[in-house]
Amino acid sequence: MLPEPNHGLDFHTLRSAYGHGLTPTRLMAALEEGRRPDDERGIWIHRLPPDELARAARRCEERLAAGERLPLYGIPFAVKDNIDTAGIVTTAACPAFGERAATSAPVVDRLIGAGAIFMGKTNLDQFATGLVGVRSPYGVPANPFDPRYITGGSSSGSAAAVSRGLCSFALGTDTAGSGRVPAAFTNTVGLKPSGGLFSTRGVVPACRSLDCVSVFSLTVEDAREVAAVMAAHDPQDPFSRFEADGFGFSATAPHGFRCAIPADLEFFSDEAARAAFASALVRLRELGAVIEEIDFAPFLEAAALLYDGPWIAERLASLESFVTRRPDALLPVTLEILREGAGRSALDAFRGQHRLAALRKQARALFRRVDTLVVPTTATIYRQDEVAAEPRVLNSRLGRYVNFVNLLEMAGVAVPNGFRSDGLPTGITFLGPWGSDAKLLALGAAYHRQVGGPLGARGWTRAALDQRPIVEAPAADMVRLAVVGAHLSGQPLNGQLTDRGARLVRTTRTAPLYRLYALPGTTPPKPGLVRVAADSAIDAGGVGIEVEVWDLPRSALGAFWAGVVAPLGLGTLKLEDGEAVAGFLCESYAVAGASDISHFGGWRAFRAAGA
Image 1: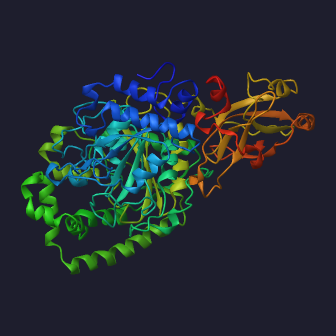
Image 2: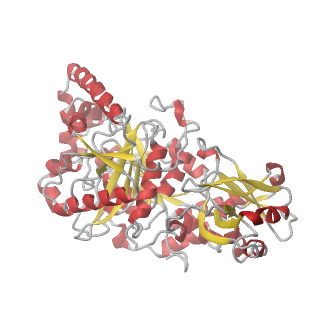
Image 3: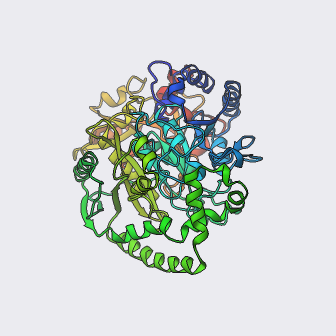
């Protein structure tokens, strides 16, 4: 297990642990030592052996020491086994289909390039066909909260790996809801981005025009950081969007946001699920949401096109040769679904496209008056034996609130919604039009903080910095000021605040727009905080840095600031929740040759590490 007191693999907790002496090499050793076969059963198709993980960790440390900028330094991740990783067989949960990948998918390359440590390949519903997570010859990942129940699919292994604490985040794919349903059943976050923001080159197609790479994580903030690294236009992927370059994933949750919910909610007689969503509506109103009920029929009609319409033929299109040659290699339910695609005609395809165009227009009209559509991520949950008895009927029910999203060119963030009366996790999903990812992440983060509770299935709590109370605006005679270094509590210059009557409001983080440097030759030692990214370009390498927010009497501001000398100056800092406050910024010329200490997450952790 992780060294005390650093429990948890969410990014903030892990970075804090690195600041207190943990290293990627020690983390890999700790994860290896803490392995329990029961936790991993059915999750891994291929896990890297300990010596390879140790080498990857050492390379990560060497790269940092050489001065590389590594926004995901030392963060372990897993990859669904329908996404290529160089040197490893990609099976898509069909052993006979497997081939060793010569190169990694671009999304994997970008993550490793950012300093993340690849742990292995995870199990899935065969060829990513299913929402149940039981359609694999490699076993079934048991639900982390009750092994009788399904984990959900098709990205079952990825969600279970994050929930059980085997890695910090994992890649899945999402065509019909596979990046969201497992999140609901494992108490994790599932980001389904706008199509084309993440390259799908190197991904075994399920339905190529709809496929997305998705992200499972413990917090919404973590998913946002991963997305910022992964988003990029890929000239070799015909479905990649030019807008992916410079796409911003950071935004502030709008006050008094408007959300739509289905008027005709269906839970298939699951009263625990109904009660859980009713609780979600209470929380949304507490966050200031204005809720509008809408006719859900157009979304259900779009969902039906995926499996009951011509798009089932697209599922067969990429696999037709293999299905024809080796039908014996597929699970019966997978083969049955794929073969249905052969019965669709070009007429069916064009009629489906024309109807879908009308439905997309209706969806876009909705988002002209609301910020988000909020739905239960799933209508219910099933035991494994129930799915075995009715595999296709129950799979279809799980798709009610997810199947339409990619067809309607929408983005979504699935977030935990606490626990049902029977102890099983539940979730809700914030949905929006193409390009609304930043807003949805902001709403999801605010909601997840409102829900509280443990992260995943290990009982880990959210980092203290994310457990802050709602903060009132400063009094008229006070100015709100963020400090990042020697003025922090317990640091040498903190008295310059307290002696002037300043009051600590909270400890938090900046938005992921900054880098932190140890300035040479300063007495006492001081850091320099430099903004490196615009709000619309979070992928420029910015990270969130620990700050303290103080209220300082306005009458004392002049005397306080008179003691601040170049290269430090007063500027505007953007915090992770979107609040903008006055704070210390450093002129960029002063960090030439300075040590980049951003991976520590803050000055206090850097100093605690003995630096």
